[in-house]
Image (cartoon, rainbow, N blue to C red; front, side, top):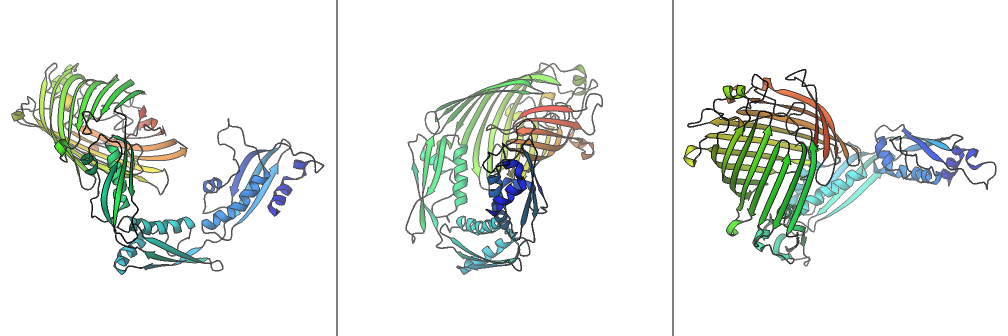
Amino acid sequence: MALTLLVLTLLGPSVWGAENDSAPPHLILRSLKITGNRIISTEKIKDELTLPLPSRWPWISPPPFRPQELEGDLERLPVFFQTQGFYHTHIVPTIHQDEAGQVDVVLDITEGPWVMLERLDLEVAVAALEPELTELKGKSPLKVGERFTEKGYEELKSLYQNYLLDHGYPRGKIAGKVLLDEGRNTVEIFLKIEPGLLCYFGEVTIRGDLETPDYIILRKLTFKKGEPFSYNALYDSQKRLYALDLFSSVTLSPQQVSAEDRSIPIAVDLQEKKKRSLKLGLGYGTEDEFRGRVGIRLRNLWGGGRLVDFDAKYSSLETRLMGTFTNPQLWASRNDLVSQTGLVRRYLPGFTDRSVFTQTRLERDLPWHLRGYVGHGLEFARPFNIPLDTLLLLQGTQTGKTYRTSKALLGLRQDTTDNLVYPHRGGILSATGEASPDFFGSNLQFVRSILEARRYQSLGETDFILAGRVKFGLMEPMQATSDIPILYRFFSGGPDSVRGYRLDYLGPRNSGGYPIGGNALLEGSLEARIPIYKEIHAVGFMDFGNVYLKIRDTDVGQLKYASGFGLRYNTPIGPLGVDLGFPLNPIDRQRDKYQVNLTIGQSF
């Protein structure tokens, strides 16, 4: 009531008129400012307000101002500051209203001293666990001598609770006690940890009206009967089952057992996706201009979880028709058979080519989130429209010649990201190798390897993400081949590599300025992804890279750099974006001033 009187007093008699029974005019909140706060950010304080705030966009009308809403916020804010460790906060509102009924509000906040964590004691009911749980103190969100917050206290309990859940103690309990001394502005925390019985995974039951064989499902589980119980293993198993793209719903549930039972059975509830799906896509990019895609997927073909995909893609740079057959766990083994066949026509700055290819791989999941493959590839490719200057420089390149490569394939990939579309944490490591010797039937012999590392890290629990990548590629002719033809060489530059430079134009070029590629590639990126408003994010980036004619020519001193910024709008299929890149050491200062790149999906 006192706050209500204060707010009404500050608004003054002009709000109510000369008579008490007259109706107040319609009030508009023109602005709200917060001053005096030093530690708790203004944005965080505004997030706690229920009072509708004026938009930062000038074309959006300001909201109505209701004194009772401000009153409620003035009562809630001191409670919010207590959760942040401030128990002596004072808030003084100042309200100005003009004759048109427009109101300006200023909240002057004196945070006062914050409460310091003076002591943190841990009591573990099982002595054998005490050393392991004590080590977790180094990861504690609350440290002795630092500010106490209620969120940090809850995260502290979750830290120990999650450890128990992932190390065989699903019935563990965390009891906490907080002793606050407001006079001294200190707090003491006492945690009592009761792990309960060590439990193990029991029988697994698969439920649902399914065509997918049980063995395909069971072998995607990352736990076995008799292993210590872990919720993290359930989560990883769920991700791997979803990755099969056979199921629209995947749930792994521990079943109820008596308190004395150490074996916990697991129920796997599954619902299969439709047998057929169609994907259509349209887009536009600065390099490939209009692009379209049609994709058809057939699931559980002939049973066994088999997949058949037909993909057609078109753009001004590439036309591709491809079919893929996937047979998971071939002959009930742990190996997945993947076979692809396709036609490709490319229209690149330095040449045009047509190719027919087929590729067969055996893929397998390995420990530590690894997936590896071995296989064979066969390709017939023919280049066209190659400048005469390029033909003089590259003796191994002939216009209209059919190059036949029969290749052994080897690859390894580790994916620890937390989200396939918009990763916040984790990384991707990949290594691929190809060898095309003459005894496989190749008329072009070479070896090629590519290493790439990507890393993503969000700042705290925010959507502010730092991302980075490095890519290194090498290829070398062997046996009867002395020079790699242009259509197999490395190229760099453009929206998917070093933004700020034209597509493929980094590295060696002929006398006419057209790229000719090279046998070595080095490129990378650093990018900050910054949330702005809801699904809109900004990015700032620094890219580097170059292509080298021969492996021996590799020189980091010859790297080209580009920096720039862009915007992203997140959608369920990935971010839509635009980037503006500026070359820092341009190739041609007249032509290479900046590049505008329109994209679908993250740059990496």
